[in-house]
Amino acid sequence: MTWFTWRQHRSNAAFAGAMLLVLGVAVIYLSIAGAGLLAEVRSCTPAQGACGAMQAWFNSNLQTWWGLVLMVVVVVPVLIGMAIGARLIPRELEAGTHLVAWSQGVPRGRWFLVRAALLVLGAAVAAAVLAAIAQGWFAMQRDLGGNPVLSIWGGFDSAPPVVIAYTLFALALGIAAGAALRRTQPAMAVTLVGFIAVRVSIAVLARWRYLPPVVFHELAGGQLTAGTPAPGPDDWLLNSAPPGFFDAAGHPLNAASVSQLISRCTGNTQATCPRALAGVYSLTQYQPASRFWLFQGIEAGLFVLLAALLFALAYRLVMRIR
Amino acid sequence: MTAAIEATALSKRFRRVWALRDCSLQVPAGHITALVGPNGAGKTTLLNLAIGLLAPSAGGIRTLGWDPQRQPEPVLERVGYVPQERPLYPDFTVDETLHMGRALNPRWDEGGTRGRLLRRGIPLDRRVRHLSGGQRAQVSLALALGKRPELLLLDEPAAALDPLARRELLTELVDTVAADGTTVLLSSHLIADVERVCDHLVIISQGRVQLAGDIDALREEHRLLVGPRMDPAVAAADPTVVSARHTGRETALLVRRDGASSPAGWRSEPVSLEELVLAYLENPAVGALPPPTLVEAAS
Image (cartoon, rainbow over all chains, first blue to last red; front, side):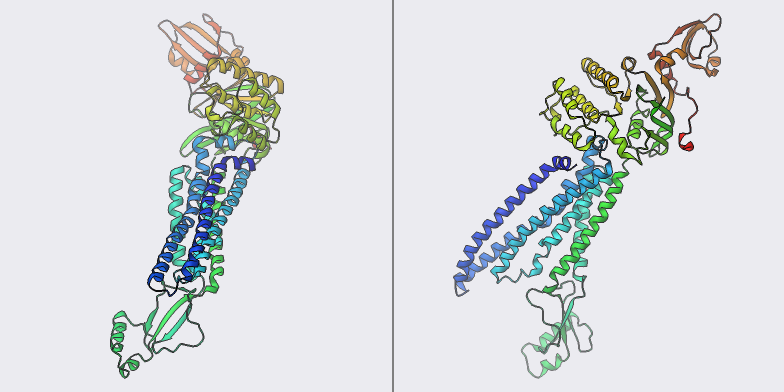
């Protein structure tokens, strides 16, 4: 069964290996080239004029490359789901070769389990290598420093735990869709749409709620409330729960009142401003950097659980093709 | 007679269409049985049920004594199947196809299978997609025979083969059965092939078994009676009449009358297998079946 599985998927494996090699070599080359450039950028002081322009150029170029790497990491799982998962069952049914595969001495249930297990293994290894490459690239950029866009949370979607979990989910979704629909193209379409829907809705709606965010109050006067620390550069400021202004009684202030307050304070007469702002505070919610790996674990666990359910469904569907 | 396949009130429905309905039949062990019937009669469905690729909608089937759904392993290890279009993995070489057979079947006969293909001049290093139709059929058959099957299921084994390849394939079949005592169930449209290699016959039509038995015995039981023209309604009402042909003066009846002498004024002739099969296929309502044996209920 191992040989049989390998023989049918070795071209997938070769293609994935070649792509990873290309990406890995590119990243290593860029890292080396980038490190050389970095030394120049750092030694160039002061950071204004020509040096500032050089730094800006350097950072924007790095960001372009990082965007490309991130895109590859985000897209690869669903490609695996479509190209390998969704085709697994339909390509046998469409060619009639299921009559060969399922009439040999290895019963269909074992055929499916061994094949699924080996595909899970292969996809997980590929995803892990891909994520490791991306993570290396990301770490290099963070080392360069001075780039506030790249907080640790900026690498959430390309960290190994979730990339592996997304890939297994996409694979399971593809196999289940193929077993349910029995035709390649609809199965691929369902895999694509289903993956994007689940992946985006979890990233947008669920991720920031895995743990209650840390709430940071800041009094307009500048004094901080005791206890919670102010968000640092590596903390994840939650846009989903935007910072807001509240009056002393805790009622949210609308945009008009906020701008009114600001106008009363501009051209600041020491007398009116503090009084107008008395008790007004702003509220910021964030997920601290220390929760990064916990959140990775939660999100990866969620997708692995979904993958397991889909594999169980696919098994039942395959056994029911009778 | 021990049965390699025993179906009891076997039925299979695809959505709303019954592909098989209340089929009860026995395929005797150690014989070559032909499964004959028009397209869509349920022949392929029956073969797929026998190896467990399909599950019955009602009724039961036992293959070599096992239930192919509940005990797939012993059935799959011992039953060779050559499906209709002879599907194989087109990007596998012949060698890799044999590797697959060896990897998946515990009773695999490597030497015999290679020898069989080499004797027929099939290049083992060639990809299946580059083989001719006849070579493909040989590889498909070799894959099934490599299991050292106790039962061989062949769906239209001779279809799309040239006469020479057909003869070779059928010769090979007969030799194998003679050497190993393998039971064969093959579906075919070609009565001449059936006549040459098969000793048992099952006629299946519209999802039902019309006739089953030893070919020689069936031919003895059936006679062609030719006599003066009779009322077609009378002929149609006679349960022993399989088919009737009326011309201006004469009536020809193909009847199943075991041992009965022909009536006065009628000429009795033996029937060919082709006449017999066609008579049943033309009259799908005629069923000549013993009542189903209730094997499942008794056990």
